[in-house]
Length: 327
Image 1 (cartoon, helix red, strand yellow):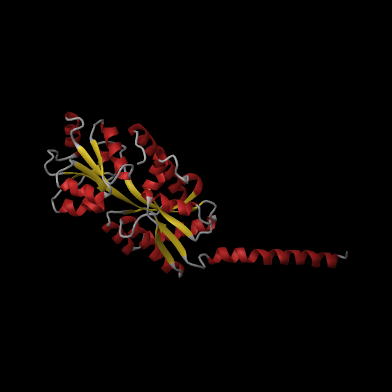
Image 2 (image 1 turned 90 degrees about the vertical axis):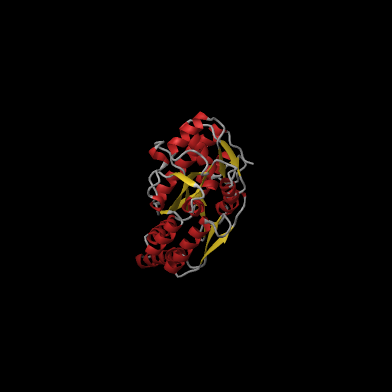
């Protein structure tokens, strides 16, 4: 074969290789080139749904492409998360993951169909919502220190309502009891609304629930807030102390983060993370989240992965110590 023929043959191979690679390269550059789904594993109207739709709306504007929110509720959020864990890892299906199905369910449900660390790739933490510890006005405790002292003097006499066994607010209560060394009777309800109704009716002594659900009743004077469950005080109730001021190291928030099926291309993960970070800085998004009592986070993928592992380990210990089982 002559040098010229050899060169032509090599050039042909290179051209064929470039042509075969072009669609993949163009597809990555064009992402997204079709509608994207964000699965919210809870019913419409709640905090998770509002956060998910806010992100979807803004991503749609940035991308010039439809970003559809699909509510897939059931089994404490695990049905929606499982559907994404089994989805094609092409960047067109993501889940707005929440504390419960990602860091609590794996420890209380041995039959869980997915492993959050093995089957999902964290993209970014989006926001976190603190919970409030609040009591019925008849409870003679004006602050958390007094509540702890009261509980120690009357083991098992006080009761706390939660939105259900194994929920994030239930685990928050168990963590509080463990760190404070007190015994308070847990009364699980089928949701935060009936739990709050019984608190206002005086059937239970206290409640731990997400701030957005309790704020109206706190401001109306129907219940008394004692502390917020974040490490620092919340701007929404700046005069209210954080539990960590009394019990250093305590933290129990409900957080929301975007995740995708494992093996989703890193280029897509980085793009989504970058664009969600931009969204988190928009004034109207900050205002909307603040109205929910939520703090904007917009973390890196690596920071979210670290947070997820830490939360799994922390809640696993609380669940084991309290012997909490799935119902």
